Image: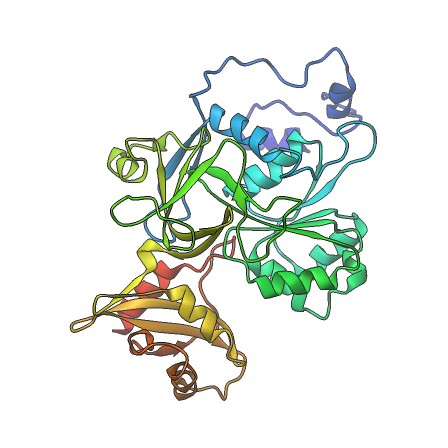
Length: 404
């Protein structure tokens, strides 16, 4: 049937099968079992040659082609598999295999690198899903005896909060990794309590441009932080003048390591804005570090300027999520002739009785005057998000421009 389909399509491509072929096509199983056949052909490459080009998520601007070299991947694989960082996979030989979930899209750095390449490097089995179906996901975790669950915050929230997920479903889980967006520490704690056996909960940080740079150490779990820098990675938090800040102060996170991108494809201007002359990559993320642990608290480009004051969207979002009728929320800044910008909240409510007046009254005694939602409140059925759970605030900005 495959050969007939190729003929109909006008394609003359080699066909391999997973088993015995009556037509004599090569059997993949035989090929893999043949000790005389190398697993792959030896290809000579320079460490700085481009291995992969992925595109940034575009949550704060147009997608850009990120050029990643062979050195970036090979170096980061050794950093991340340090025994105190990522020793999930106990055996590379015999029948025993670690089992991990492969739900994240493979064109995203989390799915391609953290889920796939790290698992292959350590001999783990990745169970792939075509899409997220809650009940199929839970069934697979239970039946395949998944040891490590890779998640983004929406999946963590489902596994923790849904009464359809029981402790028995999580009996095999030993480790959970959640990244791609900030993780509420309260939700992570509830997940650990729901699992019947001890679970190490790891948060990480990385970008397409940096690969993995931070991870919760296995012997020093601290919920609410994206971990410490992994071996051979340097990080600093800087102010607007480029000066390194001490612990506890907010500033832009910068990273330096052998795993950085070589640049944005055919975009030297933006490359120079991101990679400085000393080799530091400016992430655009606002961070705080304490005792070696880093926490991402905002995005530079998402900070709202109200009459010269900087308003953190994530701070307002955290406060609003304490309201019992707020199921999800995103805050953006909208232009204002007098103030420069004003905060506006887009809210998914769990109760239709919740009104804009309720929200304003809730915030009034909780945040400063310049942080009030003077740009208004909009109730929506759902927030626009990409497949890793990040809110696409650019789309909210476009919606706000149409609303006026």
